[in-house]
Length: 580
Image (cartoon, rainbow, N blue to C red; front, side):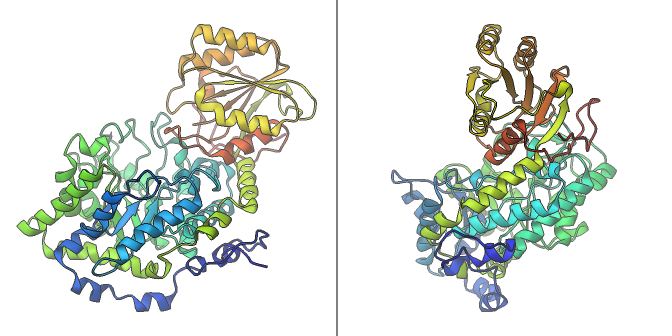
C-alpha cells in the first residue's frame, strides 16, 4: 500500500489510510548530507552584485489567465535574480505544486541556478493561502484556549506536511505577539493570548515542531504587535509602554523562539517608543541590530513584513524604505506591491550598493544568511513538488478529523444559564441562525451539525439596521431555538448587540456565538448562553472552518474543551471555561 509522506507519518506517529505516491521532495526534514553538499561561501564568491541584491528581495507573484505565474514574474526571477517569493494564493494544492514548480524551473535556468525559497502565510494551516482542498486548523487563540501544547505541535506538523508537499519551504508563523489590547484591530485571534508565559510556550512548541518537519518557521511581528490600536496595513502604529514592559511582556516569546533555534524572524511596522521613537521596527537600526541582533543574540534571517503596507509606503515610500530596512539589519525585503514595486526594490538596493550607501560587507552578510538558510533546509533537494502528492496529502480525511478535534478542544463555553445549551441535534426542532455577512461560514457549519432544519437570516452589513433587526425577529417566529452569531475585530457594532437583545426578547432559547475575538459579550452581557470560537480574523476572508465546525458540534452537544486565553473585561477571567 502506498502511504503519505514520511514527514507526516513519522511526525504524527499515526497509520494513515489514504493511498498516496511518496515523492522524494516530501520524505523528510533536511539531512546533514544535503547541507554538506551546499556551500554558501563558495556560492557567494561566484555571485555578481546583481545576483546578490536579487537574493534580498522577495516578491509576490503575479498570475496569468491560466492561473500560473505570468511573464512579469518570470522576468523578476530571471532578470532581477530574485531569491524568494510569496505566491498569490493558488486555489488548490495541485495548482500550488505546479505553480511552485514553474517558478523553480525559471530559477534553475538562471546562471547560478539557485533554488527559490517558496513562502506563504500559513498561520492556521495551508488553507490560509490555498483555500480549497487543504486542512483548516485553529487560529492561534484557539490553540491558546485549548491549553494543550500537543495540539499546537500537531497543528504545526500538519501545516508543514501539506506545505512541503506543495513545494513550500517557508512559513510566516507562528504569531508571537502577546495580545494585551482587546481592541487591537489586526492581531486579535492570530495571537495565542494575552499572557506572556503561555504565548512563549506555544511559540517555542511550534518552532520546534516546524524544525523537526523541515519547515522554516518565522515568528512575527518583532518586537511585538499585540498592544497596538492601529492596523499597520492602513496606518503607522506606535506603542508607548516602557522598556520594562517590553522586556517582561512582549519580548519573551521571541526569546523563546531564538532559544529553540528559530531560523527567521519577521519585523513589525510598529514604532516602539521605548527603543526608537522615530522609526518603526522594520526601519530601525536600534530595534533590528541593537535589540534583536546584539542584545538578544539572534543571528538568523530577518525578513520584513510587507513593504507595500501603508505604515511604510505612505510614510517613507517603498524605494527609500527598502534601503533603510537593509541598513537597519533586515536581510530580506518582502515586496508585496505590484511588479513595478518589486523592480524598484531590487533597483534601489543595486543603486545603494553601487553608490556605497550600502557596503559590500553589509550586503554580503545578508546574502550569506539567505544562502545559509537554503543550505540548512536543503532547498535544492526539495525544489520540485509532485502535484498528485500535494493533492493527496493536503486536506486528507485524517487531517480534517484531527482539525475538528482541535476545534472542539478550543471552543470555549463562557456562559450557560438556564441550561440553554446544548441543543438537541436530533430533536427535529427548527434552529434559526442569525448574524451578519461575516458569520455565514459558521452558519454553514451549524447547518451541517444539525439533523433538524436550520434556517438562516443574515444582515447586509456588520451593523444591522432597526428594520433588519425587526426582520430577524419575524424570522424567529418560525424557529424553536436561536443561535445568533456576532463578529467584531475591535468594538462590536451597536446593531449586532441590538440584534442579540431583540432575539433574546422573543423568549425562545438563544445562544450567542462570537466567531471572531472573544470580547463581544461585553456588549450584550445579559444573554443566557455564550460561546466563542476564535474562528475569523480581522481580515474577514481568513476563516478557520475547523473552529466553526468544532463550535457547531459544541452547540449540539459535544463537550467544549476551551478556556479563555484572555480576560473579558470585568466579566470573565483568564482561564474561565464551562463544561456540559
